[in-house]
Amino acid sequence: MLNWYAVKVLYCVRIDGEPMETKLDAHYHGDEFYEEKLLLVQAEDAKKAADWTAEHCRKDDNTYVNRYGQLVYYRFYDWLQVDEIRQATLHNGTVASTATYRMPKGTDAEQLIADKYEPCDAGELFPLHIMEGWEHSNAKL
Image (tube, rainbow, N blue to C red; front, side):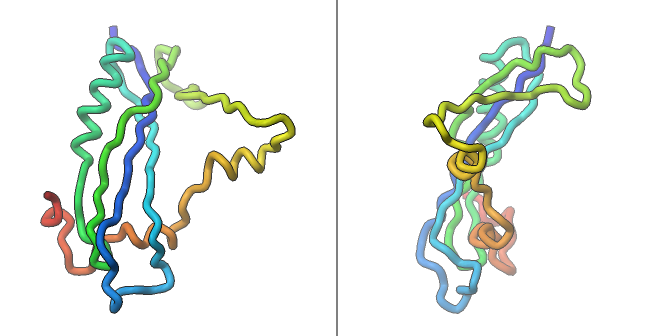
């Protein structure tokens, strides 16, 4: 019998090389990125869900040139967590994953959010955009 699992994965996005001076704009910054995804996977057990996820996610690895002429390496890092979804059928409100955070006494929710979650806005993601005229499929190594 197959069960459903929520598998949290992490991708690392590294940017290599200096930007082309003529391409620099207000969106450029020298930061790198991590992307966390939560995948729903159907498998016989948690180990098989994790194994399938690792194999599947490695296929997402990619290298391309961004809009600033730098190489971007998008790589699967690892799966971080596997949670069994304990309901036979999925429906609105099904809990896919849960996490509990230990924080110092007196930490408010806003501080937790600032410490744990600071997603990028659209402007911050510009260093990941493909360079104009560069075909994504041609950039794979």
